[in-house]
Image (cartoon, rainbow, N blue to C red; front, side, top):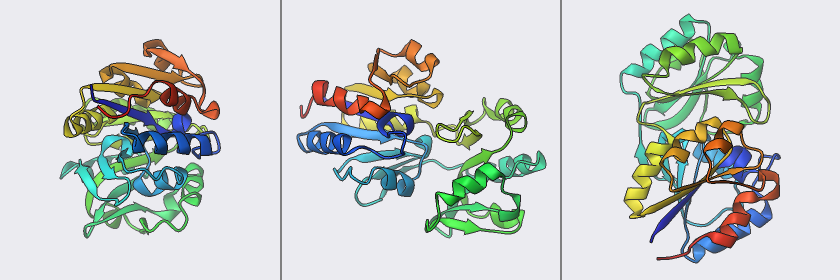
Length: 272
């Protein structure tokens, strides 16, 4: 039986230093070379996920932007794209009307960019942007019309809980929304994506594309619930949210103790 193994990144495959350990890199690279079918699913982009998993050089597909995109790990080629179409601009203008200025992800003239208005950045956004210095996707703009140019596919808002929570409630039924505290910095995030963009949907598409019959997943946060619900087996790391642990097949060792890699080395099936 062909099995697809999918792990979340932050808080799961990554340690608290926002890196995969040498041990995790070695185990996954070796098992993929032996035929394990593996992917990770993350809210991160291709560029930032590549940075924090620098030692993972095996050839496997990546689920990024919480399922908005699937990309090839080596070439960076898009295998799947989900975008807002004409609805993206109206969402963003409504956020701004509520004094929430998002980081806007889109394709501007066919090139992937994240755009923001510097003078409207919250302290949390400024901290986020510090970690993205030198990123070729960065695009500073100075007015709303410029902010909303291009083919939009993802909004990230970092602001006070009392400002973001009502917007989450407003949009959660129409779009794929994630509202949570950041794992590392504990500020509140609201992420809004097309309805078709979810970890579960992207995993289902990838599973079909690869001809796999079984799905095993690993995670730590509330945004992993949807992929836990479609999996044959779902493992929560020891540091995971209690809500995720309650629906898990079992709880494994923590992210800082390489729980996913330890499980894969012991139980993963390589090849047919």
